[in-house]
Image 1 (cartoon, rainbow, N blue to C red):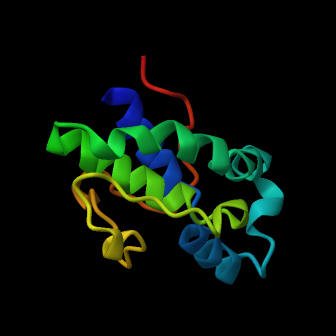
Image 2 (cartoon, helix red, strand yellow; image 1 turned 90 degrees about the horizontal axis):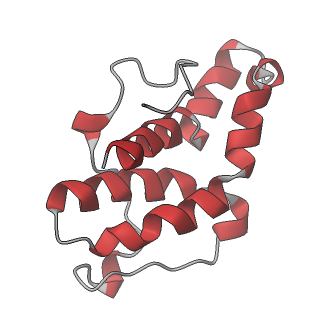
Amino acid sequence: MLLLAWLAGVATDSDDACVAAGNRYFDGNYLDGYPAMVAMRALRPALYRAVSPFLDNADPAVRDTALAAALAFAEHPALAHTETTSSTTPASSSSPTTRSGAANRPSTPCAPGDTTPPA
C-alpha cells in the first residue's frame, strides 16, 4: 500500500494539469528543467498497467489509492483508447471526470518534489 500511495503522489505531481500550471509560470518551458519528470511522464503507460490491477482490490483504501494513480497515469496519449472497468465499477463510469484520493495527495501539489520512493 505504501508504494501504491507513493505512485499516486508521483502521478499527481506529474499529471497534465500540473504541467499546464507549471507552463503558465515558466513560459511553456516547465519540463525543460525537470528531466526526471519528463522520464516519469514517459513511463505512465507502464505504471498505469502496474496500478490498474489494484482497482479491484477488496480494501477500499487500496482501490482509492490505485484510482488516484491510474487516473493521472491514464492521461498519457498512448492510453487514449484504453478503457478500464473493474468488477466494482459500472462500465459507464470508466471515464471519470474527477479524481479520488485527495486526502492522500501532497499538501503542495504540482511542486517539484522528492521522487525517492519510501523505504
